[in-house]
Length: 81
Image (cartoon, rainbow, N blue to C red; front, side):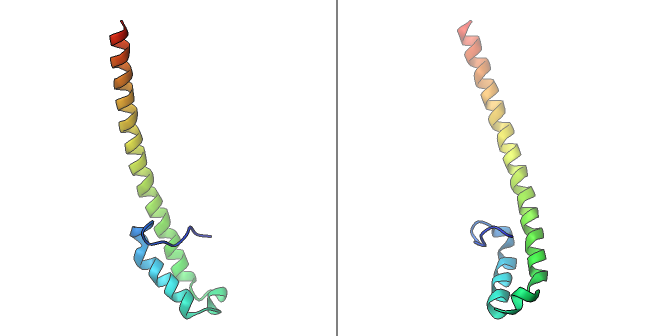
């Protein structure tokens, strides 16, 4: 199973998505018998790579947010004293 194949949500995998959708439209019955399996495997790998990149960005973003929150807490704690 794969997520919805929208190109704007998965820009890294746009070429593979287009090829996979074309394969499905060119082989309406063959897709059930493994005609597009190679593209599906490539698509899954691309989604995994994309997820790693997104995870890395989110981790960096959360670290920055955590640092700013800690700095804000220190400021408010010092003002209270």
